Length: 482
Ligand code: ATP
Ligand code: MG
Ligand code: MG
Ligand code: MG
Image (cartoon, rainbow, N blue to C red):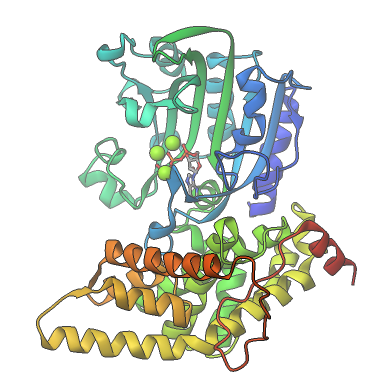
């Protein structure tokens, strides 16, 4: 089954169970100070769960664009190194707002996975909250009993509060959850160690695919839990992982969601995917990151030097550097993937098709700007590493990291990544101190200028590193209509 069909089947399945399809909310969150990017399907329904808004439909389903690169969920360091955490991914979900509860959520999840998608029951495991005496929380017997009706009991695993109790925040709706995991190892490996033993061990082939959250409590400001009058269901399933399971691949990147992008890069670089681990990581990082960048720009967040914009710039620069160092791309290349993005995602997310040219232009300019200094920065870093090695040292100073940031446009996480690749570490505290010093210097400068006429000369001959777009919506709109 092709990825597109797998997605539409999910939606149609829940429509047949009385759910209303809701389009994905933007990836960029503008009206919530607690969240920079959408990181779960439930974000757009937060007010319904908090009781601030009466939902239009009691049952909804959708496929939500999510980005997990900041805050509570930050998977950036996993991306490319493993094959099932992405920066940007799609989360399929179904919700009940005070309508159905555990029985239906469990039965439908199982029906969809095993009957519609025909995933083998012998490879699936489910987890149930084991309880927490310190909070007087009992195990989720209800969920256990519903699972027991459809799943062999040796496939039900007890899970701790960390994995099987979901909370929106310090206060607010919360409750136990049941996760569904799948064992995708070859038969001979399964014969040696039962999948059951690997579910909670981050095994690369025994992965979590779906999380069913049962919101039944409200956490009050004094920390106590109160039973909610109306109970809700909130589920989230990683689309790329589901496709991998159905297409029986050993990596998300071998599914038809990513293969067209990998093939493009193979042709362009002359390198083959699947032959060398470091090169493979670069392939994966690039095809992952281009999605994150394109979708975010399509939703109105341009790369810039602060907040959400800087997160996107960091992701983009990471991709550029992986392409440069491991795939041999010395001139802009990422932007060329934008037409493939439009082709493959334009049907379900029309914004990436409608704004294809704009997105490509922004990315190309960002790439050119960073490539102008990348080589110098990398050489400087290599020189410093050699010097340190000669002295038997392994820590790159905060001062160096700051110079790379300030002069060459290297985000701290990028310097740290490059350092780690050759066994070095980074003095991040030292970097923060340098950063603070610079802020103080510019504060002092602007204070001394207060009240004076300041004639701003155009800076000529300065390395142009931090290319900044005007970030107002009107600018974007104006740009798009050109
Ligand atoms: P994991 O334990 O694998 O990091 P999670 O428990 O953090 O996943 P949830 O918050 O429960 O994930 O999100 C619901 C589903 O979204 C997961 O079951 C998984 O299939 C998918 N998912 C979560 N994070 C990612 C990611 N970074 N990339 C791709 N899919 C993801
Ligand atoms: Mg996670
Ligand atoms: Mg998990
Ligand atoms: Mg989970």
